[in-house]
Length: 185
Image (cartoon, rainbow, N blue to C red; front, side, top):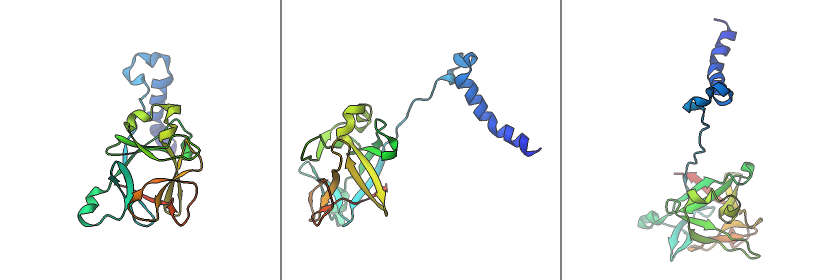
C-alpha cells in the first residue's frame, strides 16, 4: 500500500464524524447529537513560596507551616475552568472541601477574600455572575499567581507571618506573598 492509502484510512474517522454531524440524512442517528460539555474538577495542593500550606481555622483559610500530625489539616484546592471568560487568561473557580466552599472576592474599592458556601460545579454555569468567584492564573518561573476577575490588579496572597488568613494584595512586598506552588494531587 502506498502512503496515499494510509492517509485515506487515517482520515476515515474524521469523515464519519463529519458525516454524522453535518449530513442531513444522519439526523435520525443517535450519534448525531453533539457531546455535552463535561467539566472535570481538579484537586491540587497549593502552598506559598515560604512553604506555608493552607488550612481552615475559625472558618477562615489561613497559611502556615504544618508539621507532624498537623499536616493532615492541609486543605486541598479544587478548581474548575470558568468558560465565561477568555480561556487564554486561564480563568478558574477555586474551592475547598471537595468544592463546596469557594473563594470569593466581591467587587470593592478595597476587596476582601471570603469563603462562601457554594458548589463549584454550579458556579461555572452562572456566566457573568461568576466573576466574584473567578481568578485568572498566571505562571512564571515555576510559580503561579491568581488575580481576582472581579477586582483586576488584586491577587491572592499570604502573609509573610505564619498562620494568617489568605487575602488579596495589589503587589508583593515584605508582608504579602503573591506567588504560589500549585501541584496536582
